[in-house]
Image (cartoon, rainbow, N blue to C red; front, top):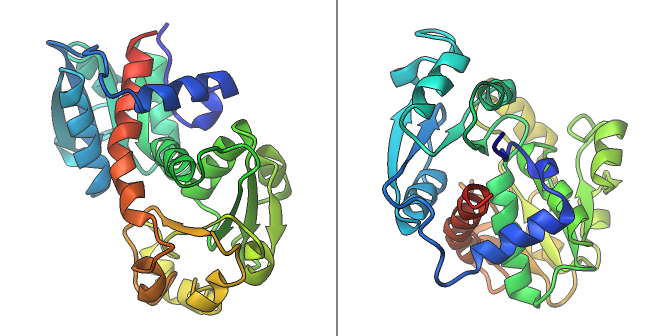
Length: 291
């Protein structure tokens, strides 16, 4: 059976180190020469689509991108049959979906790698790019403290799992009602704070994400009210270490989860972080297909 990447917990610490090393290779092996990779997007995408398509090309393959309505998961045909069809033509399936369980079903149905490009539960390729960005900034990962400020979501979960595997520390700052459960907190081994200042104090990196993810649009007004005191401002960044960097997986809503002065300021690493999505996708695919 092939290996899949549905979230970071599919990787041991040693395997994650191998993925990071593969992402940094200047001469990646052309493991996809003459092969296709199916890229399925139920959700709109900018960074994920561009980075994954180019990663496939750099590995010698041909990306075939399709929208969710073109295949109709569990509408036109079952999720399993869609995966089986795509496996007839491709060396891997990469999918960006709403329901994480659809990825689990795909992986169970086929013998080629299935890669999570984002689901409601996880965003593992983003977490790999985050680790690359943090290591670029500090030269190491072990012992680095990252403060994640905002909503407990798929990005935060995968980030927490990844940081735990490399010896880094995650501090979560989440409003009441938007924090992980005790079980989720134990799973990632993070600290939880209900004031952003407490989470950020002395941190090496400050990370935030949109307050309202795709699929939560009906909650937008309530979320803006709940998060009104959780904007990452220059004053909040001043509570972090003097050398602290700022991270955001994008797209950013300027003036909501972060001020423009932070997004565009000297501590910001959001564009190197976005660029690292390509290296992360290439590392993930090259590692999976070399197994």
